[in-house]
Amino acid sequence: MTTATKKIHVTTTVNGESVEFLCEPRNSLLEVLRDTLGLTGCKEGCNNGNCGACTVIVNKLPVNSCLVFGVEAEGAEIETVEGIADANELHPIQDCFLEGAALQCGICTPGFLVSAKALLEKKPGASEETIRFDLSGNLCRCTGYDKIVRAIQEADKQMSAATVDSTTND
Amino acid sequence: MKDFQYAAPTTIQAATSLLTEHGSGARILAGGTDIIVQLREGLREADIVVDIKKIPELRECQYSDESGLCLGAAVTCCEIYEDADLAGRYGALADSTHIIGGWQIQSRASVGGNLCNASPAADTIPALIVLNAEAQVTGPNGQRTIAADAFCTGPGINSLVDGEFVVAIQIPPQSASMGSAYQRFIPRNEMDIAVVGVGSWIELDADGNIANARISLGAVAATPLFAVEASQFLVGKEPSDDNFAEAAELAKQIATPITDMRGTAHYRTHLVGVLVKRTLTTALARAQA
Ligand SMILES: Cc1cc2nc3c(=O)[nH]c(=O)nc-3n(C[C@H](O)[C@H](O)[C@H](O)COP(=O)(O)OP(=O)(O)OC[C@H]3O[C@@H](n4cnc5c(N)ncnc54)[C@H](O)[C@@H]3O)c2cc1C
Ligand code: FES
Ligand code: FES
Image (cartoon, rainbow over all chains, first blue to last red; front, side, top):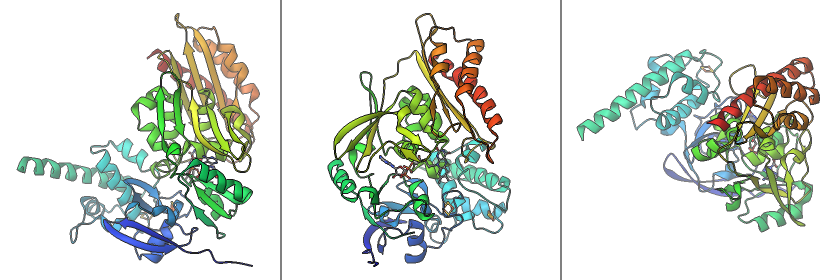
C-alpha cells in the first residue's frame, strides 16, 4: 500500500520577493526552484554536492541547492542567479565573465556567478589563492578555470572602484 | 528517493519523542550533506526525517575558562572557523572544519553530523579525539556522554541507539600552553576525502617540555583511532624532532589501513608517520605562540 505524503506548504523569500509553494519533503530546493518556481538558472550537474552548478544563497551563505530539502526553505531568504543582474544591467561579475570568455558550455556559470558574488562581497580584494580555494566547490569541465579566476579578479577591481567612486561622490 | 515525512521540532523533548516513536524509521537531518546523498542513493531509508536545526540548544556555541566549549551539535563548519577566538583556541577543530568539502558544504555541514556519520575518514573526528571531546547524548532513557574516541564503532556506525541524538559536543578548556592541529593528505588541494588524516594536541609544562600529548589517526582503520602509545611516549619528553619521529613510528604501528584507489596500505602507513610529525610540529608552535 502506498499513501501519498501530503505536500507541505512553504513560505520563503526568493530574490527579495515573498514566494509560496507546495512540495514533498523529499524534493530538493533545486527541484523546487527549477520545476515549481521556473527559476532554471541553477543547474543540476551531479546532484550530490560535488559540482556547485546548483549553488544558491540561503540566508547569506552559498549552499548546494541539491543538498537542501525544499521544506527547509521555510522562512529563509534565497538568492539565485536570476537576482544578480539589476533590471536591464548586468552585474560587473557577469560582464567580466562575458568580456573575459570565462565560460564555454555555460553549465557551471550560474553557480560560479553566485559563489563569486558571495565571495567578493565578503572578501573584496581576495588573492588568487583565496579565490581558487573558496570556489573549489564549483567545478568546470571546459575552461580550465584560469579565465574564471581572471574574470573574478577583474570584477573585484571594478566593484571596488565603484565603491570608491560612490564614496567620493558623497 | 523514497517518500518520507518531515518534522522540524523546536525542543529537545519534542525531538526525542518523535525519534522514539519512529525508532529506526527516523533519520536525523542536520546539514544534510551526508544524509541527503545517502537517502537519494538508497544507501539509507527513512519514514520520517527529523530536522534538528530548529532546536536552539543545537545551534549554540559557548565557551568558558571553567567548563570549556559547549558546541551545539548542529553548529556549522563555517560558524566554527570564522569565529577567531574559537579557532585560535581549538586549532585542530578549525583546521578540520575549514577543509570539509568546499564553501557550499561548510555552510551547511555540522560537526555533530560529521561525528555521527562515523566515516573512517571524517576530518573532524581525529580533531575531536585529540581535544578530548565528549558527545552529550539525549534519548528516551535520559542523558549520557560518550567520549569521542569511543563514539564510532565501525564504518558508518556509531554507538547511539534508536531514539538517541547528540545535543552538543563538550570540549575541555584550553590554556595558553596547549596547542593542536589537524592535517590530511589528499592528492589535490581541496574537495577530496582524506587518504590519511592526523590530529595532534600538546600541552607544555613550565620548562617547555611536554606535559601531555594526544595523537589521533583517520582513514587507517574501520574507525578513527586514538594513538595511545604514541601519545604517552611524548609525556615528560622534550618536544624535539627526534621525539616526534619516535612518536610517529609508534603511531604507524597501530595503523591497519586498506588498499584502495586513494592509496595502498603501505603508502597510507608511510603518510601516518609524515603527518604525525607535521601536526605535532604545528601543535607545538601553537602551544608556544
Ligand atoms: C561534496 C562533499 C564533500 C565532502 N567533503 C568532506 C570532507 O572533506 N571531509 C569530511 O569529513 N566530510 C566530507 N563530506 C561529508 C559531510 O559533508 C560531512 O560528514 C558533514 O560534516 C556532515 O554534516 P551534516 O550536518 O551535513 O550531517 P547530516 O548529513 O545532516 O547527517 C549526517 C549523519 O549523522 C546523523 N546526525 C546528524 N546530526 C546528528 C545528531 N545531532 N545526533 C545524531 N545523529 C545525527 C544523520 O542522521 C546522518 O546519518 C563531504 C560531503 C560532500 C557532499
Ligand atoms: S548539482 Fe548540486 S552540487 Fe552538483
Ligand atoms: S563552461 Fe562548461 S562546465 Fe564550465
